[in-house]
Amino acid sequence: MAKRLENDTIDLGSTGASFLKMGAIVGAIGLAIALFGSFTTEMKLERFFLSYLVNFAFFLSLSIGALFFILTQHIGRAGWSVVVRRVSEGFAANVGLMLVLFIGVFLGMGQLYSWTNPEAFANDPILQGKQPYLNTQFFLIRILVYFGVWILLTQYFLRGSAKQDSTKDPKKTERMQMVSAPGIPLTAITVTFASFDLLMSRDPHWFSTIFGVYYFAGSFLGYFSLMAVFFCFLQSKGMLKETVTPDHYHDIGKYMFGFTVFWAYIAFSQFMLIWYGNIPEETVWYIRRFEGGWLNASYFLLIGHFIIPFFILLFREIKRIPAALAAVGVWILAMHWFDLYWIVMPESIKGHVGISWIDIACFIGMGGLYLAGFAFFMGRKSLIPEGDPRLEESLEFKNA
Image 1 (cartoon, one colour):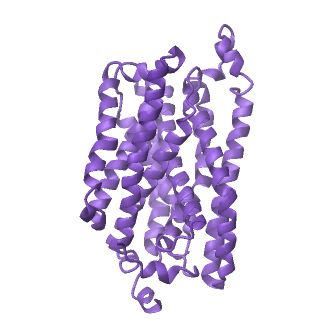
Image 2 (cartoon, one colour):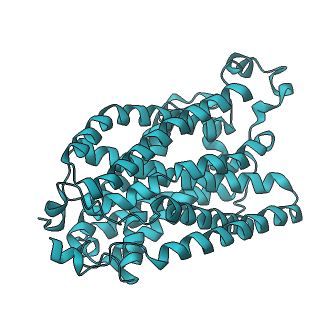
Image 3 (tube, rainbow, N blue to C red):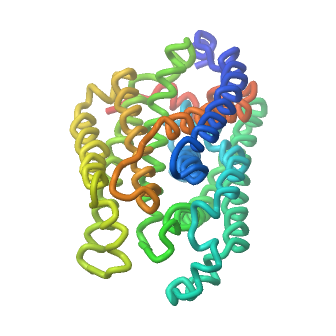
């Protein structure tokens, strides 16, 4: 095992410094372009905040997916995933960055959420009934609670795992397994309510008890897709070439396939139950997405988010070729972003799909900051958990 690690590059090195410097620069420029560019549109500042929310929800979902991955691997005492877990710990720790980026959502609350306007409650008995929950003060308290839980968990696993690199203490793994047990339901509850608050409350009349699972499914699928892309990128830069093998990619591909199906199942379940119930306050949400250009967008989401990756990932060979799996990962990430766009935008952009260069600039900007955050939290840490007692099992892992 030691010889194998000696022959491989297992740290970011100069690439980490580039991520930190260039990510911060690109992030600031991208968000600035999106912000000032929004004033050239009819919607003015509202257009920027809508794009900001889409991208905020997207990058937050990747960190949430990474956290779920860490928790499930620890609770399942998984051996195969040890070599890919440290990178996951770095991406999960980015929830701290996302808390800082939430300032943008906070500043745009008046543009994003109609329930922040006191006049909206005046003649609306439904909103009046929801006012104890849908008010700015309680909303911000809940957001702080959600991020507090996520930051505590992600920092615990990243710091504990990094410390184990030097101590080699196997008891640290046992303690992380124990923390994972309550960590899973805590994360599930907070993610569910966060999706209600950040996304579902865009239409304060609409509700879906399955919406939290829908967001979780996209988050988990999105993160596995990010893993395929990121590890392929690292190996193209000479890192982890011998450590992460086609067998590891194969398992990542299996998760991508499984959660492609799971996302489609949850999406259909939500639609079918609302269609069957035929209650106006529920169906209106889908009606907006079946009008004008949004109808074509809905069909595109079905084909692009489910049918295309489903049939591609059926092939075993695709899952064992890093470049091929990474290409599928890029496509799924694009579809995951478009899914969130489809959730956020129709409340404000009626009848047509308004993807613009502002959305692209905002994505590049927040993406740059996200990579910078990853480099910051990883610091000089190893890209693999060198002290994990199951590391050798992971290095020798062979997929059936």
